[in-house]
Every structure is written in structure tokens, then in C-alpha cells.
Length: 396
Image: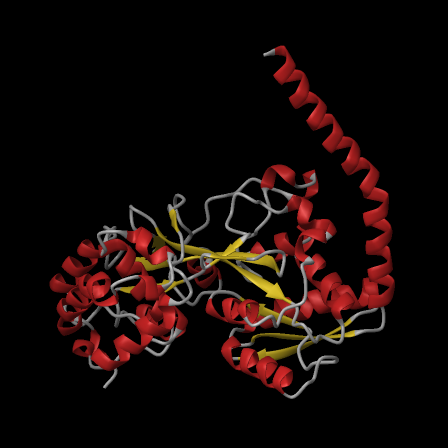
């Protein structure tokens, strides 16, 4: 026993010594990256569909321009899949340098496609100085069951969250079956965004996880499963829900933003979001009343991490890394989590932050009253087949 203990202590001491020896080397390498980054322009392809997100990116761009001499151009996109196709086209055309994308906001099936086709630069993410603050208990090394392998850096966390108004829904439906029961009591006032809208597809995945007999099968590629058998409970549920839903399931809101407005107008009883802080932000901005609250299912709701990645042919790889490192800083993560700014939850571990980088959470109107268990995302390959089947069944 004494020998084993001594061996463990020696191993730990050796690891500590190696880490201390490597620190000056890593610091010098990072300093060289910062020097090369100065004067570069980062073409940051990121969703541009929300003003608060756009303003945050503008704020971050201003900071890195002032501190590192880097220019960030926000290329506003509506669908990351379109950017993936552009990168694929550049590879096919032999454009191996100075590609049109330097940094991409990405996760899920888009990351999986880029990784499998060798279209990403790296590994680089865990060499960022601010990686030391990352909460590795979160799924920062897994993206829809695909290992990240240092090819993308975490930026924020997300979790499917429902929003309701206590004046209309004093008791939240805490399961899929309770949601169906609420629809029966209030016909025409429950809905979800039309897939392939991201929120609508996530709602489908949530139901599949909630209703399926073996959720673990969803962690594997869809081709390894009996799709018809696994998804039958989902279609049976929707066949019951749609006749009770808004417009009897013959039409669906185009987005979660439209659902928020219908909730404010009392046309719908519930809205949904993939940002647990969005309800609080909507209350703070006056878009929803202070009687609004957020909730999740008792057994949990789908959650994930969203990332930034560098394409293989990026022309400003150094500046992209410096910008990604700033996005991981306690300062930037704290600013992003502010509901008056964006409200996107942090990927950092509170116990690793400098004292000035963490404040105790406070109760906020519209926010979740308590944490909701996080369910892992199904494998990325399930997205396309679920959307296709939904459109065949209900799209017309």
C-alpha cells in the first residue's frame, strides 16, 4: 500500500513539474500567436438573427481591436449549414489558403460534417490560455455525441426551456404527458416552431427522449437503430397533440421569437427557447410581463454547448484563436451571461474564476427557479432524418 501511495505521489509530482516547465514555453508560443494576429481580419461567420447577439459580437470585436489590433467582421448568417457548403466548395476548388471563413459559430451536425471531411484546423482549443477556466464537467469535449478533439472551443451553454405566464398556467406541465393534458384542457393554445427551425427540431428530439423506451439508442448514429420502431412513440404523440394544437396542427409558428410574441398576446400558453435565461431577458426588456416564469421537465431537457471552430483554409488562424480566447475570458463570459446584454450562459467553472470574475447568482423575474437536469443531445445524424420524416408526415 505504501509503495502504491508513493508511486501515485511521484506521478502527481512529476506531472506538476512538467506543467511548470511547459508554462514558459506555452506562454512564449501564445505571445508569438498574438504578435502574428495583430493586423489580421477575422471573418466571423455567426448567426445574425438576434439584435442582442449582434450587439454582443460588436462589443467583443471592439475589445479585441483595442487590445490586440485585430479586426473582426461579423458575417451574419441564417444557417451554419450554408457556410459548411461554402467551405466544402472551396476545398473542391483547391482553395487551401485564405478561405472566406476564419471563424464559425457551430455545433451539432454541421461540426460533425466538417470534422468527418477534414475541413477544420486544429487541434487548438485546449491550448488557449483561457481554457484553464472552462468547466470540463460540461459537455465541452462532446458535440452531439461527436468528440471535439480540440477542433472547436466552447462559447456558451444552452438548454431547452419552456416559458409560461402564471396568470394563465399557474402549474407548469413537467412532462410530455402533462403538456398533452394541458393541450386537451386548452385546445388551440399549444404549439412549437415548424421544423427544420432549430427550436422545433429540438422539441422533437426532446419528445423522443421523453417518450422513447431506450434513450441510449439515440446516442449512436441513426443507421445503427431501427428508426421506425424508435420513433413510433414520437409520431403517436404528435398525432394526438396536433388536432389540439394551435390551428389544429395545420400551421406552426416560424420561430421561437414568433412564439414569444404569441405568448405576450395570450394567443399561446407556452413558448420555448434554447437559452435558459431568455425568459428573464424578455421580462427585463418589457417584451413579456413579470408574471412570466421558465421551467423544464422534471426528468430533464436537452442541453448542449455551442462552439467556435476554425476552417482548414482560414487566412487568419492566429487572429481567430486570439478572438476565441477572448470569448472564453471571464470578462467576456460574464458580459455575455448578463440578461440585459445577451443572457447566454457561461461555459466557465465558477470555482476556477478570479474573484472579480464571479458573483453569486440572484433570483431574477422570468428565470428558472431551480436547475433542470440536462439530457444529452442525440447523435447529430438523427437531425436530418427526424426533420425529413416530420415534413413527410405533417409538412403539407
